Amino acid sequence: MPAKPTTCVIGAGISGLTAGKAFSDWGLPYTCFEASDDIGGNWYFGNPNGRSSAYQSLHIDTSRDGVSFRDMPMGPDEYPDYPHHAQILGYLHRYADAFSLRDRIRFETPVEHAERKPSGGWSIHLGEGSTEEFDFLVVGNGHHWDPRFPDFPGDFDGIVARAPAGTPPDVVAIRTAVPASNGYVTLDNIPCRAWPNSWNRVRASSKESSAGSPAAGLEKLQTLTTIGWMSPESLS
Ligand SMILES: Cc1cc2nc3c(=O)[nH]c(=O)nc-3n(C[C@H](O)[C@H](O)[C@H](O)COP(=O)(O)OP(=O)(O)OC[C@H]3O[C@@H](n4cnc5c(N)ncnc54)[C@H](O)[C@@H]3O)c2cc1C
Image 1 (cartoon, helix red, strand yellow):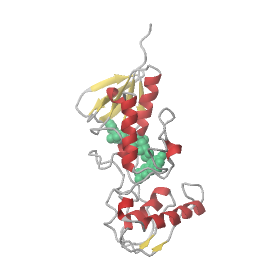
Image 2 (cartoon, rainbow, N blue to C red):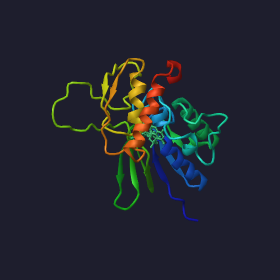
Image 3 (cartoon, rainbow, N blue to C red):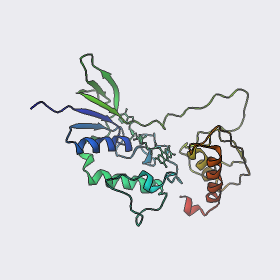
């Protein structure tokens, strides 16, 4: 019987975990390399890999039922409609444990370089200095840790901040906010990061929101503005 093909999975965030789960379901061998000391990626608040964009008050903005894994849904008795980031991380831990996904993960093992071999397959160069060979490669290394800033013409002497900059919500006193996007995460950040400092104006500038239309994005902002004035306990 021919040997089963081997796969390297980079990252043990949601993408890497679910890829690993699928390989396990099919009985296919794989090895997951994770740079950090644990699973969760972006949802690991304060991740020692320095790459989590989760901020203290973060709740998911896609609903519980929309993001649940089919083979282990988040039950409405255990989770609110829009769980806090700590609940999402807890859910990912439960998922990894339920399907023994940690057995195939090598923590604190960053991939330095993936090199396609002329004969097919991949040479995976690891941070620890060794190289391992695989037939296939799945890259789940995330991208929110690599911010892109727009290059607007003209001068601006205010603070230019990336939305999920990972800073506590109370460090920025916003008087006027000009989000250059109507994306949920951006709009989420304005009230959540500004609270409890007073802020009085938001000028939203965007062609469309991540919800498909500027109107939907602004509706979200309106909702979140209300959230921003709730008690600090509800935001932490
Ligand atoms: C503030 C914020 C809010 C969000 N809210 C939502 C939401 O409500 N709903 C939703 O569906 N999505 C949301 N997202 C999108 C979010 O990116 C996904 O939910 C999810 O975290 C993506 O998972 P991932 O595995 O692709 O990447 P990540 O979670 O970034 O995980 C990548 C993993 O790869 C590891 N890694 C990276 N490079 C290497 C390397 N070279 N070698 C080894 N390991 C490596 C990292 O250590 C990390 O563990 C949000 C994102 C942000 C920033």
